[in-house]
Length: 382
Image 1 (cartoon, rainbow, N blue to C red):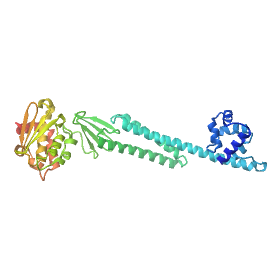
Image 2: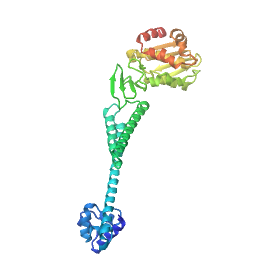
Image 3: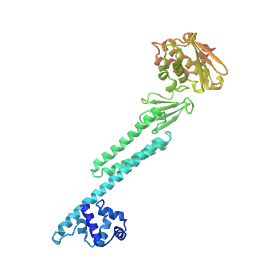
Image 4: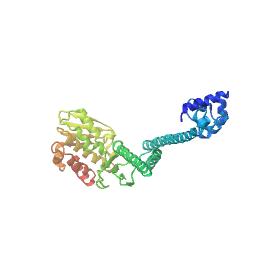
């Protein structure tokens, strides 16, 4: 079907009737811009307007669709050609419209999922629900593109797309859990422990420890090897203060102010503010915390922090001989000799520089043992 030829024919007939585009448009109940599109070949009359248009222009439908006057001997042949051309044109238009609707649905579904993943709180179940809803809408859009396939092919394509979409959502959610430290949106089970929340997803578990405190941290258990009783559960931010992070500040000498400052800043109690001073002559370190000692001692947080900080600093700064922890209410003093003589397994901790596994076994794991903390604190600091 030659749209340009048909358009020129419509324009020629309209002008022969001394009608403007506006007048013809009013008779047909369309806009003059629609008439202009027909006449310039940028569009074709809708099926519902072809009969009224042919009547207004005093031509047969066959001649209108041919784009010219048809001689009687060729009338039947042209009629058959126009019928086939009309069917082809209609099919192409339906396909084009389907593809446009499909594209809109795909984009709309992706936008719904993206907004659900970025604007709704990760702990809200609505985030996961709307994300999956977006995937369903997007899959319906894909089904518009696959209408020409067989039923089996359509089923495979549509379900395959939906499965890939859901996998993508899980991957994005996992990246957010690991990098941004947020609750997983697609957890099937949510359990609450003493100071933690456990989120169980089909592929991994997430432990949110020290819930709603300054020292809240997440552990992503991809192997599902932990339980509430065995997961590393310390009263400070393990991601910040754990040996895997603070080991980067290991140094042979106390005189490196920048390194020492970074180490103290990553250890417990730093959240309350502090200043520090280095004694280069006697190889000592004084830390003045901006808080009263008893004020922060809920659940022995002070004792646990002082023991952990002492072990960490002495293990990571080789030539340090003493540490003084000053609070507005009291001063706590400890030497390396006291640590070496009184703290169990200290030699295993500093084996070959520092052994991270031994540090976790003999320091981190002991921090949650209240009986051990009471005993060792009194021997080290009193």
